[in-house]
Length: 247
Image (cartoon, rainbow, N blue to C red; front, side):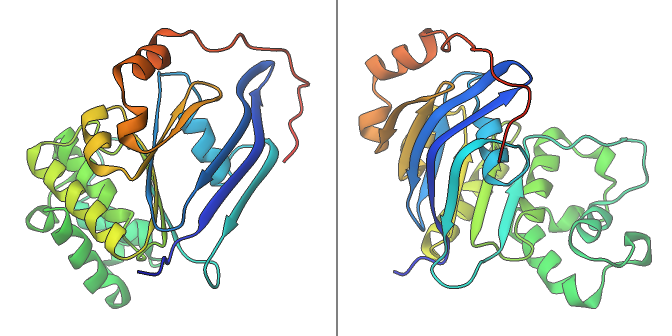
């Protein structure tokens, strides 16, 4: 099976926020078309790393994407969605706002109607498309976030703890999405705290605590000794860096 997503190479990537060093000399290879999970303690730099990959945070070092052909599409699913829950914003309105230029209050554009239908169906939220976003449960909102990451169909998917609030139905939908992405050769970079899910669903795992501690197949990384080292060791002491960080 040929991969549609990119291989990603990080060489000596470091990142600082003010005087605090968040990431130090990250060297990492993510193969094209694989599901690659990032695990580690809170504050270990996982979210900062994927924001650097997305070009949202300045860094030192090199981040290179090797696309199989032309540059493809990137889908991003954040950990949470912050919004005013009193807004009269339906699931359908939210999906329209995320994928079309036409104002959501004018309705779903014909160009995106079928894609929105399919995305909501894949996460089991089609029957709640008229429900107000503020009235959804946390798990339902998370499924909607997964749905918006499907439009347009991505070649690279970045997931920041997508399972954090999912209910049982949402978990099954997420597993189905991962299986579909893998079959389609999509590259998936996935931050996750559920190590059981990582062990059964990821192709490769990187343990990160401000620096890469281990990287490899789940069976070799998610061992009791290595997990004890990962989660019981304090992050390396921050070092003072210049205020400016260069891309």
